[in-house]
Length: 260
Image (cartoon, rainbow, N blue to C red; front, side, top):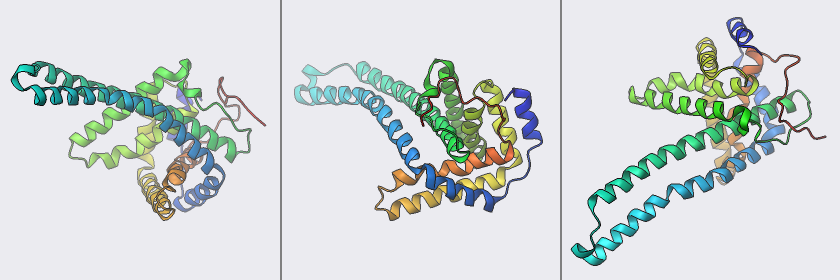
């Protein structure tokens, strides 16, 4: 979908029905819950090395502290070195958060593709990393950084604006998933434009889906949360489908591998 077409559809988008979206979300979740778990598992497996790297400065600081305690003034390492490592740790944590956010954003975008394929009865894809390849990788990280920045800004404004930005930021992922060739700035504009039109219903669906997924997961001895976590994405998918729809000739992506 072209940029002009995307904004035109947002402008002409119809109202969405809470009950209809919610019931459809439950039915689709029954079909894609396993794929949701697989996407979550892949995200965790990718992030584990990142978090291991993040803890390296902590071990370094702990080693310096132990050395100072053991040898007293004779073995004291300069305070400048300790402060430098703390600054390094802060920068490293920020970089890790950016990387983790980008990876999660790209994998979640692919999950929306899976939702569409299952919902419309299309062949399922096995290319989980289609949005983490060269064609879209830079855009994925730009959008992830923008999302992080908007959330930080909302938190700095006494947290209440988070309720407002929550809706367009949730819509950003699904809009990108089906319009990956639209520029990053236009994707952000589109998410806020659509979010402003359907903010109340979308926020209600997000909150209800989030609470329900956690409650059901906890009822399954807490480990069930890993299987129900993807339910939050079902209403977002149907909001996009009902409000904007899909192009009949919309490509599924150059890197998608279809399996029978």
